[in-house]
Image 1: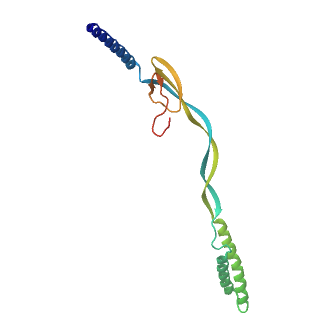
Image 2: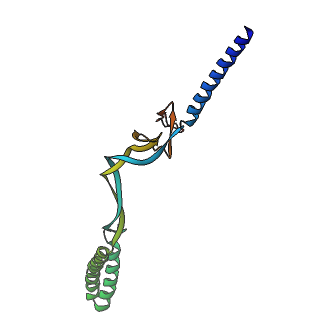
Image 3: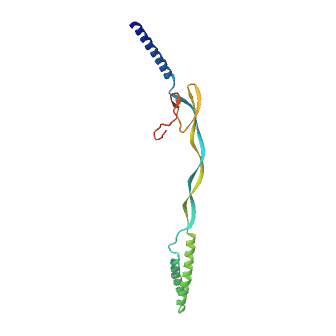
Length: 182
C-alpha cells in the first residue's frame, strides 16, 4: 500500500507542477504593457487676459525753468536801455533810455517766448492695456494602442510615452509621475 501511496503522491506532484508550468508560461507570455501607436492632443478654445504693452511717442514741452520769461525781459530791457542811452542826447537821453529799456524788455520777453515754444521734446511713453486672447489649450490626449494583437483607443489626461502599463490584462491609466496625484 505504501507503493500505491507513493505513486499517487508522485502523480499529484507531477500534475501540480505541470499546471504551475502552464500557468507560468501563460503569465510570462502576457505582455506587461500596451504599445502606443499614436497620440493626438485634444484641445479646446479658452479666453485668457493678456497685457500688451508698446512704446509710443508722446509730444510735449520740456518744463521751462523761467515760465514768466523774466530773464528775457531783464536782458532785453538792459540791452534796450543801453541802445536808447546811446541815441538820446541832452534831456532826451533819459527819455530814450527809458523807451529803449521798455522796448528792449518787451522784445526780450517775446524772443524768449518763441524759443520756449520751439523747445518741444519728443518723449517715449510706455502704454499698456489688457486684451482678451483666445488660445487652444490641451486638456486630454486620445491614445491609440496595440495590446495582445488588438488595437484600442483610450482618452488620457497625460501623454503616456511609448507604452502603457498593463496589470491583470487591463491598462493602468493613472499618471504616477512625481507631483501628480492619480
